[in-house]
Length: 342
Ligand code: ATP
Ligand code: MG
Ligand code: FE
Image 1 (spheres, rainbow, N blue to C red):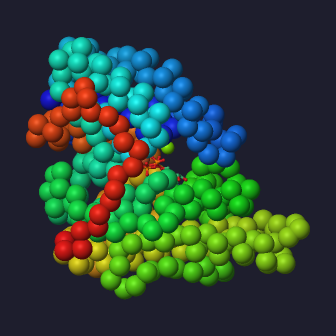
Image 2 (image 1 turned 90 degrees about the vertical axis):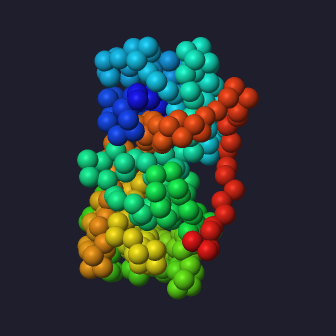
């Protein structure tokens, strides 16, 4: 079954053609990052307009690259939420219209479940059941994935998402947007042991996260350390980046391994923008190995927002007849409930 996937929840317009939920025939991402960078964050209205301009030519391009026509498409999957309402509306309305015109089934995909499904596109995917962390600009959620399509939330952030913390700390340090890659690059030149920032664990048995205290600690360090001002020393800034990054990695890795042990899972997956962080992948893999747990992470092209993951999740949904009608609408947020019993 060939699915056309469409993603427009934030600042990437993406279209992909995926076969049977696993084989990527084409996957194109048009990023708006450079447009929003001058504002230091995503400007919603600007994002919607850019999606509108990009979407139609991108669909043509994705079909062409996959060497198929619309007649060869068996279903359409588009992000329904969560995300920016105006941005979501562009992709989802486009998908609704196309599905209606071509008499095709339409899946309204949850963007976070799609991030998890980016792992099923790997040549060697994690085995069920597994633990998955969706770690991105808007979320830090730990899921227990029992079987395809069965996602149980075990914990989430109580304040900032990990990616958001990277972005905010980068901004404080005068680094470019988005902050994750900038901090990772700077951290390479620093010593992660030099400045010990706090790790907020929220109790031994909790799978929730909190990054606002860490962010404040970095802010205090930047403002209060005499060596930092008025002339900020480059070496010291690298130590701050490395210390901050290690604090985030430490918390994420500790909780992931604890979740895997609690659920007796041999595999841990990570997905979302922050899973592009090599230092995180390496340290988590190293620590997990000591517990005989394997770590799976997407290639760079599937870490951030893309439409191949949307098509992968949409394939599962369409196969299970979880389809949308014309009356269905986008949603900006999901009310998460952590299932303590699971
Ligand atoms: P969500 O998926 O929660 O709706 P989003 O789609 O905006 O949010 P993604 O596009 O998946 O999030 O990820 C973007 C985030 O990933 C940004 O916060 C960015 O700083 C972070 N990020 C990207 N590369 C890295 C990296 N190498 N290290 C750390 N963070 C990174
Ligand atoms: Mg993005
Ligand atoms: Fe995302």
